[in-house]
Length: 150
Image (cartoon, rainbow, N blue to C red; front, top):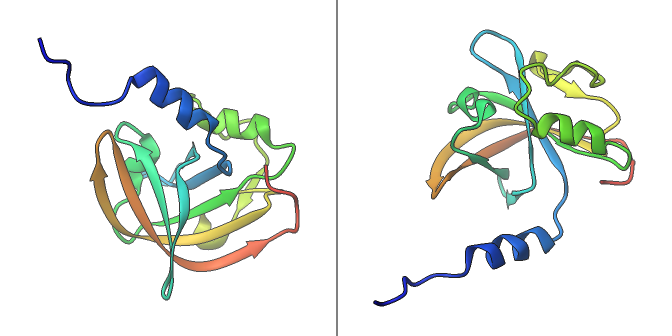
């Protein structure tokens, strides 16, 4: 029997957990105008001209369902001390915004307070990549607080 080509999955997952990444939360509004959000580590800048970001979501993400082309969202770079917020937004809890400090931000989007930075974007494209969907975001506005990123 020939072994299938590919890495040992346990080793791959362990190596990926060792890779440093910023902690980010994406928030937007669902189709009924309710706030939704997800914690992501697979987020990066994509382009300077025009300014663009990318964020990778699990195909089953409820937040992803709301991110159709043209939809607005906020990308939060979490700051030191916001670990509990990041864990809350990573959960499958339907009441993620309970016990999280947030305000109504640009375009009436849920904006988590005290973040290192908040980047307002609109969805450009969605590209499937394995069990994730890559969402490109066209940057509309950037707000920085000077806080130390998580």
